[in-house]
Length: 80
Image (cartoon, rainbow, N blue to C red):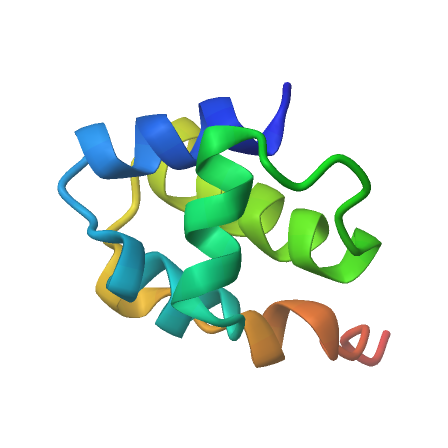
């Protein structure tokens, strides 16, 4: 799924571009360009952040307020 579609679904879930940018830790202008498809070769890290946010909010139906990209990207395995 393309980032533009994921962003559209996040907006349908009640988020704004500003909120998406804040939670994904990218600039709002990047969210805007990704949503319109103006960025032909986006940074992998930007797309991955949008993907994780989309998974959390849209697919898993969790509240975006609880999303923390830092915890998701730096999660340590629990000790056995």
